[in-house]
Image (cartoon, rainbow, N blue to C red; front, top):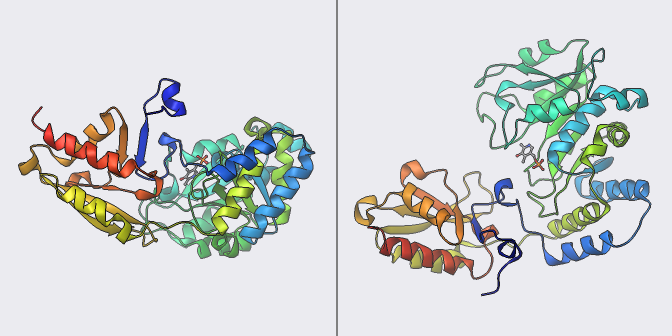
Length: 369
Ligand SMILES: *Cc1c(COP(=O)(O)O)cnc(C)c1O
């Protein structure tokens, strides 16, 4: 079999059945998006105009006044924070991230203070922000948010993520009200979200997305929101944003990926997964069925239950043997403690499901080794 580009560099072939993860290279970019990216890479363009035009095109999908493409969502957080602190003033921009003497506090819920592979607070500090946490890790009240606002406040930050504590937190509406009452910008980290419009429509001033997560773009991110604040974001290009530059080619790739996304994704249906379910259930010690996404999205996955007594291996051991084979197969492993793991078909290429089934068979055949 021909080697893929990573094998040619001496790395393992990976089958990704766990979803869009930074540790596996996030998403796979479609050939037509890559073609647009390649064409953009080989030609010259007036960059300031490309930045503005990219912002206009992104805004068509988000419904915002303007947008600014970044190298990733983390860069978007840092730049949005710097925009809130400097408000685009050129003298302040060149000082960032040194912000002493300026109103530089970024207020967020303790239950939103997450690590997505790096702490969200690192991105805030890169943008010159000082983190002010509100509430307890499992509970927050609106008065706590309100009373954290002082003359040193620069912005409120709301994080929407499966990493956040999902109960006892405040709503986006609470944040919008407090932000408006105190005339502070509201930043929303919606990095992995799929809905391009809801957060802008809620009244947030700067909403940050990752291009590579939901939208299968080349490495990129963007900030979308109110004109005044996006202008202040663009001003950071002459300061911290230079160290987070997105190239012309990835700006174009992002625009084409959003266009593809807008036209709708191919959904893998439960029926299409049925043959895989049957093939896995025929393996000694394994049984499979289909589960819908826990958050109710139109995603169906193959759930595999390991009968440890019959197989002689428990779910943890099966999952780790999958990852450690000649081909590294990554499954969703959130429920291993219940003897279950699952396969997310969205990132599995054609022919790879058969390789997963074959590997499971091999693991069952050699369970005693
Ligand atoms: C992934 C993620 C980020 C960072 O996105 P990058 O594009 O990888 O920088 C930020 N915030 C949240 C909540 C995320 O899930």
